[in-house]
Length: 518
Image (cartoon, rainbow, N blue to C red):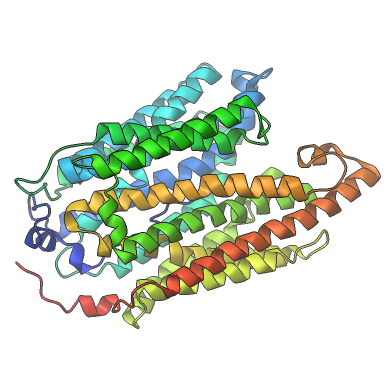
């Protein structure tokens, strides 16, 4: 539900001239200030598309089923979500290497084109099978919108710019998308058609694509740099991520954890991971170079992003479950409770630049965000069947303030430390680790909740219980949910400990004073 670079803009060291000085990509054409501002606006539009798309679709599943397959459509709804996430995750490792080999512009245009093609096919879908396949096409492009855009922004910043104001703008745009998405999806479904939840991407997306073709000028790879692409490694990464996501989607839901389907997917994931790791140590140009893990900022940044991904699963999905199952709030009304979280992210986006000017480094932001998120989960762990809903809103606001600091600053930390010629690989890798964390978090929290629940029936049947069984089930469910939130607090406390191990970098305002080669 979040884009991992929602409030990211890189610092001065990631400029075209800096890249050239260190043997990285060389600039194609020097951008004028007007062109750069237009190009950055295009990037913000793609952020809007990436954020809105995940939010809008969740609000129109019922009309989709009613229209396309009223008898069996409910059973295929999980695939409507999974097809998008599987395709998006599978492409992430390859996108990074393609950026370093071909340059970010053609990869950005290609991913945006795939996203728009998928959106058009989704809107025209005559059946659920068509829609699911089209969502996969859309997901292939979305993987680029959620990662390559960050590489584009990194290469757009001029020699004298710090980007703190742009960071705030990105945070406000993403936070606004989180708040507006569910409402927009419901509005389109009620007043037009569910198909416009997909068609709405086309006007902005086509305008952004046409503008990017004309305006965007990004560095080309340096002459003599390796142009090899490890397609075998990319395929193994895709198999691993797909199988892992299937385990988390199927396990304990569609199939039992010990079922042949889940065990088979887990074995495929383990085998693909082993082959992928071996390939990365032997390939001439690996998709995920092991040398990156020797850089402390990257090693810790990847781990922190994985923890953040796992915690986000608990913060969003299980809060909404609590509101609907324990408090009887409708799904559409429960979505409105995300507004405080979005407000927190937007507030962080607005304050990022000023805090950076006062000496806050990425390490400070990450530590502060981890501590605030820990406090928010502890507050959620104290919720009961009659807890004030304002306490839940306060916890979500704290989560927004915490996650808002972590999401963009971890990206910036990794991009600052990455070798310039591996900027694309490092940037998409952190998104890959977030997806990895979200998958493991979903499996862990789901299994924990199912095992801790000791009420009548199981968690899946709670909504159908009535009378005394309903009351007993809700009490048992809330008790189990409190433990889930305590585990979320533990993950963020671990994040705070890892943040303490980050190198003490100078504030970004100090980097702005360094000379940059012309």
